[in-house]
Length: 419
Image (cartoon, rainbow, N blue to C red; front, side, top):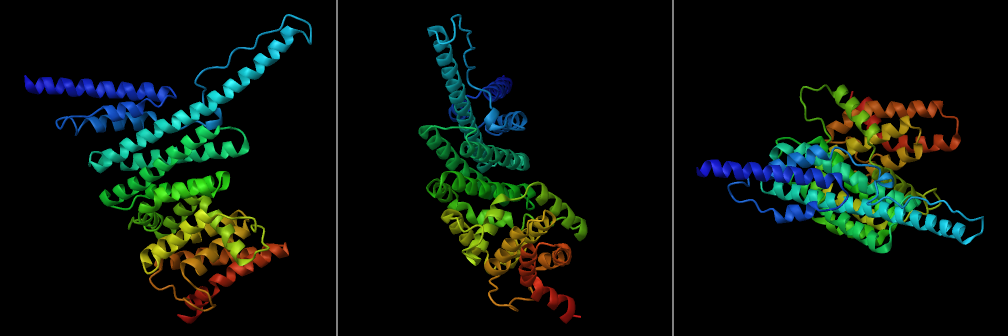
């Protein structure tokens, strides 16, 4: 009797949570936070309720709408035709009504985006707590993908605010930042928990780490360093985990996969999902190299501090340096293909001068214990030489030659001096 009652209670609870999630996700109201905080499963149900809720959440949040086209909380009033002649009171009322309807629709759109961000923050919080309790081991990859999709949605929302497609009021913008700050901390903690529990480094952790840094960069560019600093503060405890996700998670961990296939698959992945924060870091490198460069206006102190922290953490850990360096080399190859030679120079300078601390020509030409980087070098160095031979713009050729000079000592040593 007791077993049947417990089973019945569990089934009813699962059905309630599933229906609650479905109805919440169909609307833009963040009522899920109330659901998540109010449901306190007993010890008998704790092993099944979070799994049922997580399954429902992950099933019904496959993608997010473009924030500038999010459905409004309420439709704007229909336009009424004026009965009087032009210039009459009726015509004036019609114009005022149209303006008010437009403003109401705009406010509803921003409100819908904010409510969705609040809801997604509550979902992410619940996921992290479930993972921390050891109840979500089967959902690691899906949770990482969900979090990446959410952060991309937030990035798009801030971009649209900066271009005028969305116009958040000050109070709403502060709420957006508050949710984003919490989500940044939750995402960092999720990476930490998943990497501790996973039997192998997950590629999705690499994507999420880049999405976090993309979010920080977007906030600093669109809203300013004060807002970005809040995100850095939230992310600080998880920066070591971020570094590990950026490095070893990207290196080939499948021993059956050929090196060439591994490079090609990762090249295609970077080409499809290029980390925009690295493009900004490349611009910062050009700015530091030449104050008269095209990025001389770029002042991003929050990103600079985070970049320098990452660099200081990886020093002395050849495996992590190898992984991050591999990412930078592949990003450089993608930029060569796109004819973005400024980015190529900035990325390689970031690699050779910042990450490898090579200030003088000839230093660290062996790349000891950086096997993955060395394996990828024959795919990248000839690309630069080929572009130098084919490019007709002298300024672009100079950028390519400067990039080649950064790799030349290593290339010369391993191609000529070791044989």
